[in-house]
Amino acid sequence: MLKAVERRSLSDAVFLQIRSLILGGQLAVGATLPAERLLSTQLGVNRNALREALKRLQQQQLITTHAGGASRVLDFRRTAGLDLLVALLVGDGGAPRLDVARSLVELRTALGPDIAAHAAERGGPATAKLLEQVILRMEAAKGDVVLLHRESFELWRHLVDGSGNVAYRLLFNTLERAWGSVQDLVAPALADEVTDLASYRAIARAVAGADSRRARRVAQKMLLRGQAGIEHWLKSAAGRTQR
Image 1 (tube, rainbow, N blue to C red):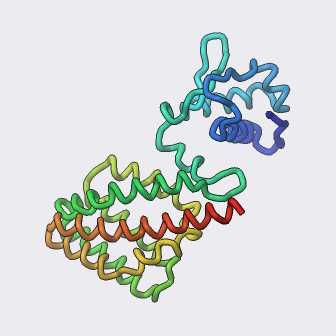
Image 2: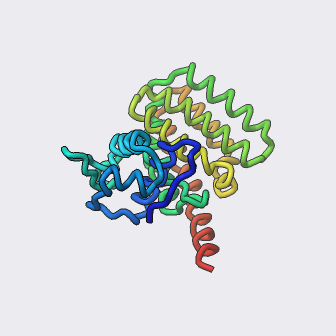
């Protein structure tokens, strides 16, 4: 199961290898890792590098270390935080994990309308002006879905800031880091959403007019179209994987 790691960044390599085994289920919940001396020998690293890696695993709530040094694998679904999303989204082979991508899209669809509504309530003309600037760049993209998708992130960044909600801000940061690794790949699946400049303009006008109801309604319809596109893409990707 465990294998010697390359000696370029020992602590990182150990951390990534053990984390991958935990997230992939090869190290089961409740399993006890070998003692430090044995584990460092199996991995071919010094104990300082191993301890640093174990410390990072503990910080991500993937393992717990008891008095005496024994480390036990935790159920990350119950203990870990959003910082693990980035690792979960992309598998060892570099391809996005479809179940995690679906979860991110569903979270986006659920929270987006509320973010837009709060931005309309609190953002005011300053936020509306920033949205208009992004929309102008979207118009200049002339239908390029990759560019439009990137700009849509910038637009939502302004909406999140305008919402005045620090929890949404921190959540958006995490989602952006996770989604950034696959955003260009999945951009075509979001074509129906990101090419709908009329809806983006409607949201900007709702923010300018402090119309939270309209901002919520338009955002919800637009994001649902994007979710439908992503779900279709995920089903197609799953079908290709099974062949």
